[in-house]
Length: 400
Image 1 (cartoon, rainbow, N blue to C red):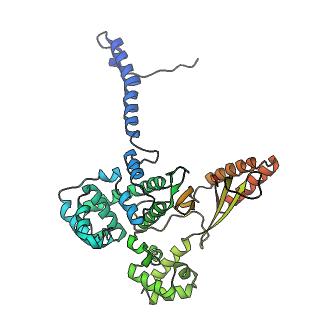
Image 2: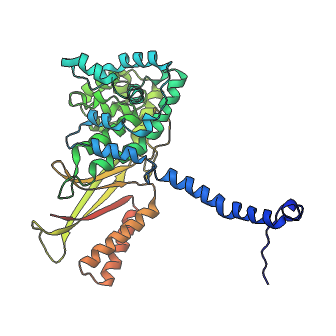
Image 3: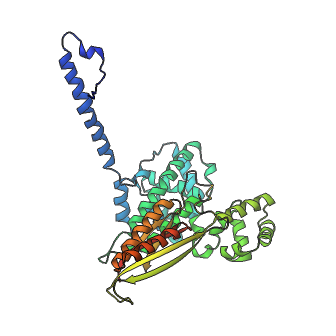
């Protein structure tokens, strides 16, 4: 028959006639105590984190600080309160450097010009690690991180490494139910999305403000700085109008207005070919009813179609100023005024997962509508074919 053996050191089996005791101690230590210690350490560590590897302390702070009217700049004030950032070391040698950083990004901070001295004093009363995190992020947004000392550059890398998952958790805290109807808040959710884009693309928050909002998209293109972007925006208006120009018109504009070389223009064109355009088709259905009335439980489905000039489906965003891998994601949000009814993240990278999601959603919808098995299977097959042509499905039942 089958036998199982365990190889043990010789001294355990033969040591002055005490092999039995040693063997017992060895067995207890290896098979019982060691796994318990390892499990205890794991549980102690994991109990401090959410499923997204964000500290529970951070999530609690984000939830408590979240407000329905937060704008992008105010979202930044919440974002930097993460426990992950308060643990970043603040050295005595950082004092002078942080003062210089403050002076260089002062105009980007949310300080009121009418009470500048009071706001400055309030700023410096914050946790030193929080101050450091915000100043480093502002240096990232203004694309001036190269002037930082090696130690501060290392700290900035740590700040940026945490940023994507912290921002995703902050997004969840904005859109989870905050009122008796189960609605989240739209304003802070949009603020989180904008802050995420600014950090990844290194775009100052001031550029995203209404007075210069047309400039921000141009800064996502290679070789363009804020001055060049403003000149181009004055010439063509919106970024969409810039995209709609012919290749010759755009090349001439980039060379004559922005002063780019032929190779720089070619780099811009490559990035433009990667930028996706999205189309969304939404359907609303109520079981057993032709129309929808207040109080109905309604199934909302959104089909999202992605297209790129270069024909690719999934792509890694052009983000040369962000030192870590960043996947391309989109947020589908159903909102009314400042109330978020539904939200989901959409990715075009994983087709298999998208097929599974669409199949389950369509199958459940058809069953709720009382469709036959044949009709249900046909609808699922149609959904799968849609997914294979770069279309994604998101859906939910909402109480109107």
